[in-house]
Length: 135
Image (cartoon, rainbow, N blue to C red; front, side):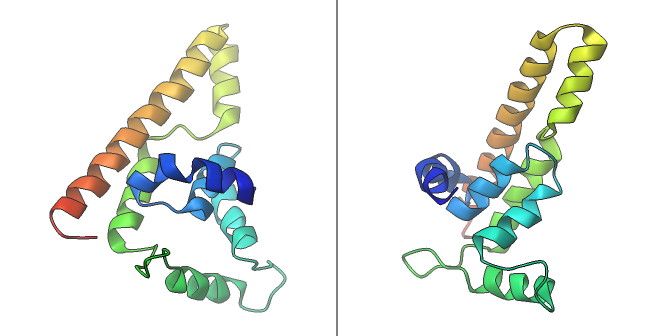
């Protein structure tokens, strides 16, 4: 997953996401709940750890880009929130759409269309925020 993350990071970096966040976004296509679990795996936090939530929060707060800037800023989190608001992100939903419309075209079109819209909306939020000095 790390190799995939480093490969796709340039696609997600304009949204403010590092490779760990990018891989978590990709794995969350199975279900949105998987996002946090993927972050836990990326940051080596076990659900069996005592205070796992606090440990993950601490690691997220300490995460930095190579230039020393924090990865998770309010602007990055707003971009992520906008992405998840608009992205379909659920393969079971796509399966239901395919079954109900009797066509995979609608399901695939919906998945890609909503993902593209979500990407562009998150991109606009992050880039405009950076231009306004909220990086």
